[in-house]
Image 1 (cartoon, helix red, strand yellow):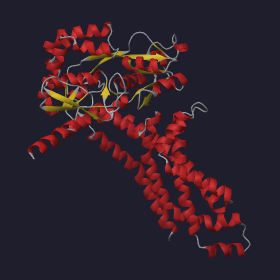
Image 2 (tube, rainbow, N blue to C red):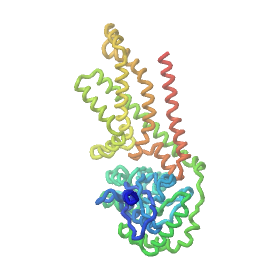
Image 3 (tube, rainbow, N blue to C red):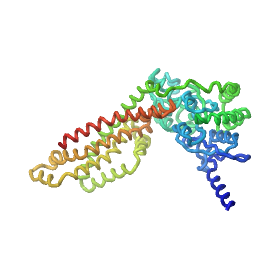
Length: 495
C-alpha cells in the first residue's frame, strides 16, 4: 500500500510538471509557480509549436533559471497580461514575468525585481511616411496606435496634450501593425522587441531609427514576498555575471550593442540597486482628480455608442418584428435565420468580423463599427421582444378595427403598435442597460470606452479598488436615470 501511495504521489507530481520544460540536475523540493501570457507570443512567452502544452521564450528561460537557482522547479500559469500584477497579489502564483514594464506605480504595491532587460520605444510608419513622421511631434492630429496600459500609451497621452497626437489603444500587438499597413492608423509606438517581431510577420512598414524612450522589463512578486524577490535578484545577478542572461537573449534574437551596454551598466550599479527600489509612493485616491477628465470622456463615449446602437437596434428590430409577423414565408424564414445567427454567436466575434474581417471590402471607422456591431446584435433581441408584444395584443381588437374599415397599416399604427410598445417598454429598458454594459466589448476594436479607460487607470495606480468604484458609480449614473424615466412612462400609460 505504501508503494502504491508513493506511486500515486509521483504520478500527481508528474501531472504538475513545469509547462516550460525547464529541468535541473539537482533534486527539486518545491515548485516556483510563475504567471505569464502565452498569447503575447515570442520572444516573451509562446506555446511551443512542437508541443503546445509547453511554453517557450526568453521570459520562460529566465523563470527557469530563477527557479533552479532557488532549488525549485518552475511551473507556468497562464493569465491575461493585463491581470498578471493583480493575480500575483492574490497569490495565484509566486512571480509574474511576461514582458512586464517597470514603472514607479509597481513599487508601491509589489516587490519588483531588478530590471533584467532594457527595451526601446520605437515608431513604426509606412514607407511613404518615413520622412514625414520621425518623432511624435510630427504626428500632430494623426492616429498613433499602441497597447493599452503600457509605457507607450502613457507617452502617447503626454503627446496628445503636447502635440495633439491621437492615441489609439489596442488589446493585442498584432492589429496595430496590420492597421498601420492598411492605413487605419498613421504610426505605431511600441517596444522594439515587438516591432522587430511584427516587421518579420507583417511586412509593409518601417521602423524609424532612434528611440522615443527607454524602459525595462522586470519580474513582479507580491509585496509580502520581498524575501523571495531578494533571492530571485541574487540569482538574476549571478546569471548576469556569468553571461547566462546574455546567452538567453542572443538565442531569442534580442541581443544587440545597446543591450550589452545596458548590462554593463547594470552590473556596475548592482551595489546600489537596493537604494533605488523604493520610489515615492503614489496615492490611488489622490489620483482620482488626474484621471477624472479621461474617465468623463470615456463615459461620454460609452453613452454615445450605447445610445446610437440602441436607436439602430430599435429601428431594425421593429422592421424585423413586423416582417416576421406580417411578411410572407420566404421573408419570415430569412429574418428568422438572421435572428438565430446573431443571437447564437458572440457579439465579440461579430465586432471582430465587422472591423477586421471586412477590412478588405470596407474599412469601417472604429466608432462606426462599434455602433453597427452592437446595434445589429441587439436588433435581434429587440425584434423578439417586439414580435412577442405584437402577438400579445388580443386578436378580437384587431378584428374589431378591421371591421370598422381600418387598413392593416392603420390597425398597426393606431391599435396594435401603441399597445405593443407599452408591453415592450420594460424589456427595452432592460436591454438598453445591458447594452450600456456590453459596450465595454468595443475596446477590442480600439474604442477607449469607460471600462477600458478604467482598466488603464487601475493598471497605472496598481489597484482596482478606487478605479472600480468610480467606474461602477459612473455606470450607475448613466443607467439609473433611464430606468426612472421608463418607470414613469409605464406608470403613466398604465394609469
